[in-house]
Image 1 (cartoon, helix red, strand yellow):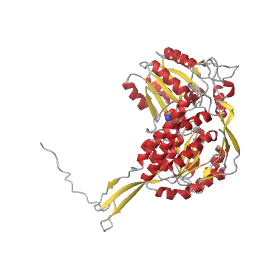
Image 2 (tube, rainbow, N blue to C red):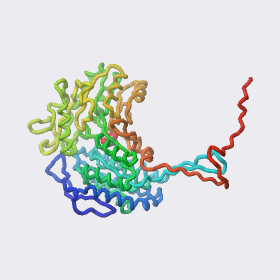
Image 3 (cartoon, rainbow, N blue to C red):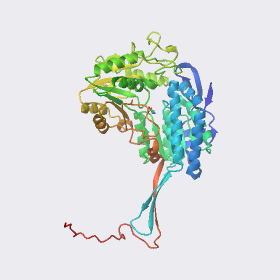
Image 4 (cartoon, helix red, strand yellow):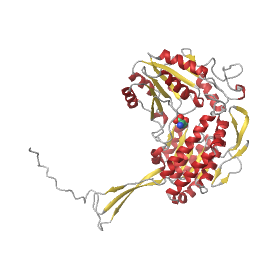
Length: 519
Ligand code: UN1
């Protein structure tokens, strides 16, 4: 498999590569090219936004239930191609096949949820304070939505934007991660062809970050983008938020996380270890919901640490088409960035989980590795104990297979430590004490809380999103995302035949204020 992939605007493949060309390679075997990618530039992005603007009105004229049927067809198309799509995801970003299949399932779940929303998109009928007058609310599409997504979930996370945005009657310009361009093009084709969408309703632009940012600036300036959705790092999210804010827009931002897991003394330790293993190292720790720091009660620290260390040492790393805990990094750039995080390890830290740290090679081997580590971008899983609050490893997201470990004395301290880095995406508590569970829920500043479940693995129809450094409070998924992709319009209709002035012409009943109860 080796395909050329380019942008598609208003149904036409963009020819040429004003933004240059790159190869999307298999990170488990970097000599294998998955796709040759022709990149667009800022003008390409702005052109796509204009095309989306031109197509938006006629797309929103399609009745919502008919748009819902299109979403139903997209879901079935993705389901029918699940294996091929999941294989492509594994090939292109190195996520284990079982996880890739789960991610494809998440696209189908999203379609299943929104296909029915086409027959709802409810507004309200609201009573008026005056007779012969009726009030209403309607959901209107926002217009053109620009969606910029990361490549760690190259099909599921984009679907959280594309599917509801299209269902609500918006047209979309989607800029996926360049290093996951083939998976993106595959999803694009399933959505456009599977759903039978008209040209321009969905456009895909392949471009690097800076060209995208410049193009977004142009499009916002021309009034061709009405809503920005972004999933990626907190640093880039802050830049996008600033740009959108200058145009009086509030974007939907889904950013990084330093997701804590608190292990209370009453916890089922084996269960907590299994969860820490999955959420710390699944997807090689490259989920926004990946576990950042385990905060363990001091009474069970030794037990938890011993078991977590052992489970991590035993875990199989390697070929993502095999039965492994995790495969390679998504792309070379994530390998280099991870090395920077590893450089934050100091002399006061204690390393667990592996016999080595850093890149897995013949000279720095990992026992039980599946395949040949030299041909891909593989890293040792690392558990760092002995953390202090002032450590960068405690405060910053470390996108990669690294989990930090700390101890706590009482729940208030655990909550304080869990909130201290200032992110607020996902969190988890292992306990058998229900009062502790509700106290934790109340005290934690994260958008998502798991009790006796890991920090990752959110279902596709609960609100997904974070606070603080993890986002601006926007929520995706389920009914909650409708507020991102529609705007409320209120209408009042006076059929009294006279000008009834609100607040001034209201007739109240005469209440007897002097009445007192004597029983
Ligand atoms: C992300 O990493 O951006 O809850 C999304 C989870 C997945 C989604 C992660 N369902 O881990």
